[in-house]
Image (cartoon, rainbow, N blue to C red; front, side, top):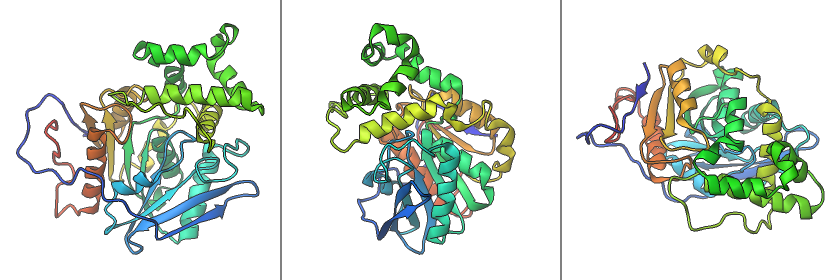
Length: 345
């Protein structure tokens, strides 16, 4: 059965594994990989060149990677692969929607794995990254050593509707700013009209829409608000890439069939897996992670009681680093399903 962690228990005496980020590191290799005639993706490797391969799958879709993402992994043990998905971050062309689907991203991962000479790798992904990790794992289970997933999102229509409308119940002010960016006549179809504006070639139309979309998502992503106002200026075009690609995937049902991935989970249930979920994750509410954990009873399921959606919130960060540390230890060294935190059963 899944080990569902509870926030209602008193602290335990067990000493947890490391739960803070590792020090900053620089890549030992990086490059651009042409994955077709249009798209070129950025990749980098850091840590131990002879270590256990792990690939970081960023969220969004469209968000891109950052240097901090290398720091979830012990650089002495892991060969850390980070890349920007099509149209994201340092991949080119930035914000490109043509030939940009979930299937294309899965194929890109296989091209990158082959290019780097990796036989198998551990998949580490949160939010949209959890979707992509599952999509890749179900397509290529023989290439996967395990999963560490956070803030589960499975691309269902209900999840997209929650993002567009449901979060209003918790963040009415942020939602009002998001909705009222559009003229009143366009608010009946938020996704369609945002998508239209975000794909408009006129910067006077797409830039304000990108800032409004990105501000909305950022405002709802943490348990405690931050003082920083993200994406107020977007000279690099990253807010536009995030919002445009995200709207593109949402408008197309994230390019996965409705009801996915439930009927295929048996292909990967034998692989060691950890699911980390913030109790107060509003962007990707716990109901989806709970359903995944129930369908995947072999997975370790950690609910962080004082966290929202962001991977960098203290509780989420601790649980994720703990998961990567647990993964590197053999079962003879540590019980991978033993409690790690005071709130665990």
